[in-house]
Image 1 (cartoon, rainbow, N blue to C red):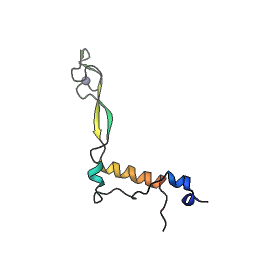
Image 2 (spheres, rainbow, N blue to C red):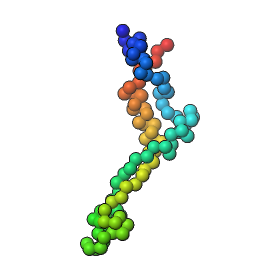
Image 3 (cartoon, rainbow, N blue to C red):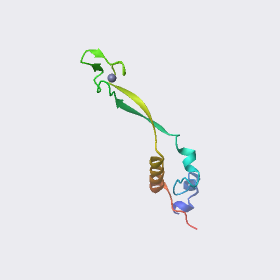
Image 4 (cartoon, protein in one colour):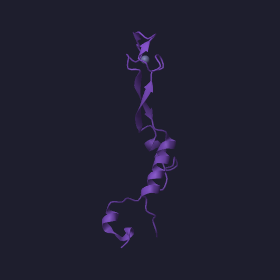
Length: 94
Ligand SMILES: [Zn+2]
């Protein structure tokens, strides 16, 4: 028995498109929906937390960095999806 005739295997699968495209409506569904937190060095104190080596930086309150919420780009979403399909997809046969 191969994977395509194994009912337990197939029960854990779904049929999905090979690629995400703007034409299919995927871009509208996913763009602007995924974010990640990135730690940025404070540009005012260059990460030290201090101005002139004695004053606590008012911008970062002495932390030297701050978190920035960054939107995952449409290009990255498509690349990630394509990679998942490549790694886990099973070729459909007629
Ligand atoms: Zn700072």
